[in-house]
Image (cartoon, rainbow, N blue to C red; front, side, top):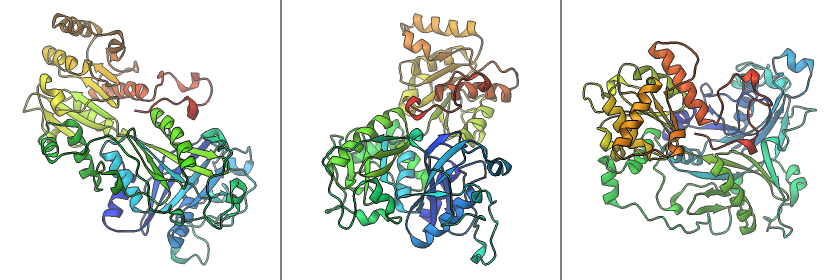
Amino acid sequence: MDAVTAAIAAALAQRRGGAVATITRTRGSTYRREGARMFIPDGGDPVGSLSGGCLEGDVVAVAREVMAIGRPRRVAYDMTADDDALWGLGLGCNGAVEVLIEPLQPWHGQLVAWRAAGERLAAVIPLPPLEPRDPVGAAAPLGATEPGTPGGTAVPAGGGANASCATTPPGPGGGSTVERPAAPARQPAGRGSGEEALSRQPPRDPTDDQPAGGPVTRPTSEPAESDAARALAAEGGDADRARAEEGAARSGAPLAGGPPHRTALPPRALVVRDGCVEGSLGSAELDDLVVRTAREWLARGRTGTLSVGGAGDFFIEAVLPPPVLLICGAGHDAVPVVEAAAPLGYEVVVVDSRPAFARPDRFPRARRVVRTHPEDLRRHVHLDDRTFVVIMTHNFLQDAGFLQAVLGSPVRYIGLLGPRRRAERLLAELRQRGVVPTPEQLDRIHAPVGLDIGGETPEEIACSLLAEVQAVRYGRSAGFLRDRPGPIHPRPEEERTRG
């Protein structure tokens, strides 16, 4: 679990207040992308970052105001101008970001639980009006205060709630705009319709728009989990459920996956899964329009802002299980791989058949250390398209067994440690066993493993190996960035599903 997620889960478990800042749209070159989060506790230091340090001071100042009033706000910072003031403060990154700042609420714990439980869904919430902020004023360091500021709250000079700004918010480059059908959806009493009316409103609390009758749950054909199945999962027989329960236990949040009506949804929100849609944005017409887009974005792992003409902006967040790095082999050279992979966001699982090697104390940063033989691997470990496999037992027959076990699964990557000749022998061994790899399966095998960056120590090999895994995870060619034409980050419409 990353530090921000852990801080949110801990604050909710301890019933402490705070604010959550989330990037909802970007344009141009930015330090972080859509979905990046920062947690500002009600007392204590912020956790995480949204930029290289140039925006955090103002974000914290707004977060303090959000905690005081109990309503979310959305702020925009535009640093695309070729202005001496921006460059002089180190803000010349030529990017623009929009940030949603919300009071900490059970909804954030639900997001934590979904991720930890391995859920795949799209969460949709309406966004409050956009407030441009002054990027020059936002550059004051955290902890800087103005005279008379109570409690030492960081308020950047030139910033604050009423900071004037001649810049413009991020355009649609980091999100999408769709036209709503001509027939207008029903609007709550006292509200205008259209983006112009929305922009004139003060920041609103989404709880003001609770649809009559509460959240709507649409039917799903997924069967309920039985007590027997849960017992089996606890014993390791059902890898899917075992992973979900273990993840929820780590998160400190309740396990998702129960009946849909138990989900802790904000009053106006949608949760889009394969089998059902929960909640409502206020009208069936608007729901249908947003759900279609949410399904498309979820399939690509995309998070961002959708602008709907006449209805405002909506933040669509793709909630996906963390990527898993499965290391087959618990030798001494697997230790630096585990140590380096965990901070990259991978949930690391180490498997080995040797009791002396498959010990949790040897891999403190691994999520699981499993003692199993290759033929039993699928009973204990869940394999899906967010799993990346490295086979490094240094035993030919063990390597062949693990390769056979994962070859027919949907894992994204299979790395074989050792020279190319050894990999060819492993494939020949599988053919003798009657296992003939398809071209698609062969394309997922990387042997020798890693990128050609030099080095020979276990730590250097781990760096090379993980660099290749990262490239596959993000669909990159792993070349020099100086040789990449166009922007460093792909445009949202060009992004493939992230691992």
